Image (tube, rainbow, N blue to C red):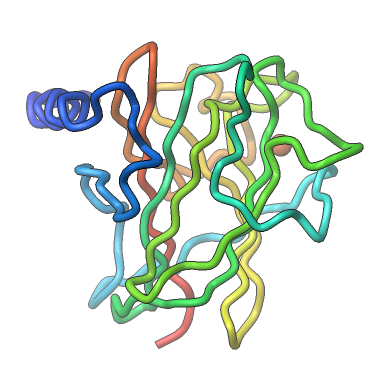
Amino acid sequence: MTTRRDLLLQAAMLSALPGLGFAQTRGLTLPLEPTPPCGEQAVPTPEQTEGPYYTPQTPQKTQLREPGMAGIPLRIGGLVLSRRCRPVARVMVDVWHADANGQYDNAGYRLRGHQFSDADGRWQFETILPGLYPGRTRHIHVKLQPPRGDILTTQLYFPSEPGNARDGLFDRRLLVQMGGDDTAKIARYDFVLDID
Ligand SMILES: [Fe+2]
């Protein structure tokens, strides 16, 4: 459901991102509401299946979108938090997703990469909106590996996708907050690890 407030947020976001100058912004500037919740009603981010297309030992990079790559530019980021809402630094955030045609690169590392959350728990990638492939709604795969503790494997989903209702793996707790338009998207998700 899109509220008036969402629309205002989107408008503010677009004006804040002239020419998609994402790379100039080292800090996380995603003026979207955080995804729920840590604190008293903490819900650790649900785990999901890894699926068949994970490739280990991805390159460390935040820029997954390559020059000339088809697809709508997507800046996606957020925080890594503990159950008590403390930012968690040095968490390896490893993502992989399909290209605009719904294809995974299973030979190399196109649209695959990892980075580490910073001292404030922030993570962010510049990529494209994943394409669709048969049997699944639109999604991004993620693995989070904290300095101590277990790896969390999950997937992120996008709001207002017709395929969400038809995908048995879809979990609305894994929906990103989304903004932007048909030329560029911005998304936020705050992971909540099952640690204090
Ligand atoms: Fe997938």
